[in-house]
Amino acid sequence: MPNTVMDTINASYDRFFDSEKKIAKYIIEHYDEVVEMTVSELAKASSASEASVSRFCRRIGMKGFHQLKISLAKEMAESSRNPVRITHEISEDTISQSLQNILANKMDELTRTVSMIDEKELHEVLERLKNARSIVFTAAGNTIPVAMDGAFKFTQLGKRAYASPIWEMQIGSIGTLGPGCDENADRNPATMGHVLSFRIKLDFF
Image 1: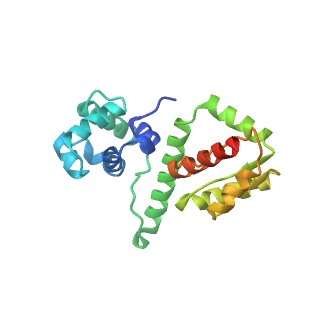
Image 2: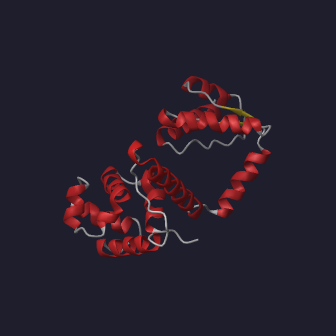
Image 3: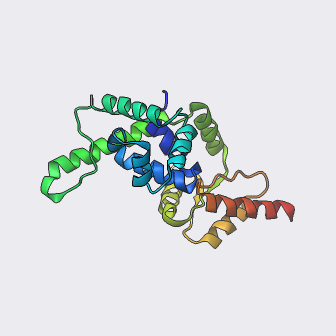
């Protein structure tokens, strides 16, 4: 399944520079407005420079801002075929519409997630998890609850899984894995750096 522009932006977000993240965040939250904007208007709205907007477009595989707008417009036209109108509005005054908004947004999230999955990579991950003796989840900040939930779910499946909100406990758990272990942190650059640094020290000593 080919990726859309929005898929590409979401998938690449963590690798963007700070100025590019500002542009990406604005497009994600206001993509319907971006198709009517000029380069200078988007730059001003996202607190970035026009040069940053141009670089951002090339970074996501677009020839320029004009192509980005055309691609977004096509995706909007495709989305308009969906009978459920997707908005981010949630209100006690419109419970029925709010529930439809939540449902539509979740369906949209799942569709985008599936479109970004590499089947070969997923198969490799599943094989490693099936053959793993122990699984240690590492996380930092607001991803800690996700790690805790992941460990709980794997435990329910009969796997020996660990997670802790305390960083020192995470380090201690990693230290018990022994040689040949595989570290795949939560893709948080800060966490990944700590884990890899610790692993290097273990291997060295």
